[in-house]
Image (cartoon, rainbow, N blue to C red; front, side):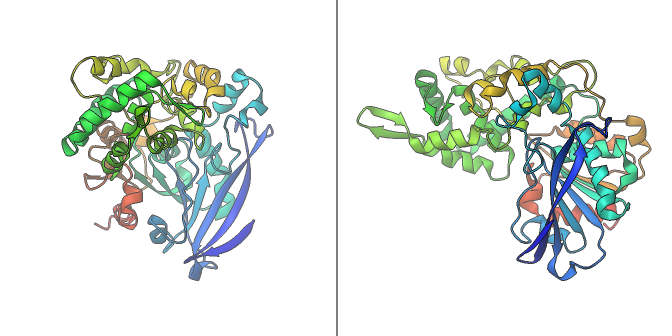
Length: 431
């Protein structure tokens, strides 16, 4: 354990050991990492704890510098633990380099089945007494971190003083098919809004898609395809994403001695945006986080997409309509084009066909909830369906919502202290 200073905060790196399988506490152990942050003038104070659960799945906790964003507001009254969830960041990372240590694809898939919200919450409950002396703590869950928080309320509410959720209220019973069936129309609306804002991008997107369909270039081993290009639509779910996408598109082509070609600048930007090298669990576990019961997720986003033929690139290029972009969806082709995922294709197939996912939510316990809960619900969130979120909010006793169109899904990042202030006020009935 080591401590050091940044502007306004004292940081302490903490390491924990937890079971891979919490039903076998004496079995294999894995290491977790969390970074404690406390205001410099309060390092020796007896402060309540707040644990932050990042979105994803597959992302480690954000690496703040000093008191930037919401962290500055949080350390005014909390000692904060920025937890790298298992398999992410410095918490026994799971990727193409480390997973072969488990064995072949079957062993890898069985291993990763322990990396969902249920075991993330069990990790938290094992860590909590070590830090708080047994006192409950406050959880702040962003996106998938909110999914984890709702499971926390179902499984171990005694460990919670309060729960704050931003853009992360999951459906309690929707299959992955239902999630994506609701998602594609939202994505289409976001693309339409982008084209209305930047009508010049309609033809530019068609030109890029047509070029990729004909040439299929590679960038640092990453195959650039029309479908991969479509997935840049994920940018449209953040506050300034539409503008950033427009700027990316305007650099697409350059004139060369061989004619018009896709620029190195654009190819590198597309490769970087499409690469899962830094967060492979996002691709591997993205549909698994919805798995409950015996029905496999079965590449839900790919199957459901067939119900929305307007998203087919070849069809769009054959006609004169716009090429639609996609969003937060994972497809089998991701594991063919991305060198960070290619070795994990069979592992992903096994996860997609798995039929023994534990249930994640307890509706009866949530209906009897006594933990103060506040949730920011973004009115037209591209990543989490608003109707699903509000239905869940109504199912959790005492949960108070702040429904807003002021922010997109990244409201906690964009709104920082103001978003956290609003949620804290709601759980304290101070409105």
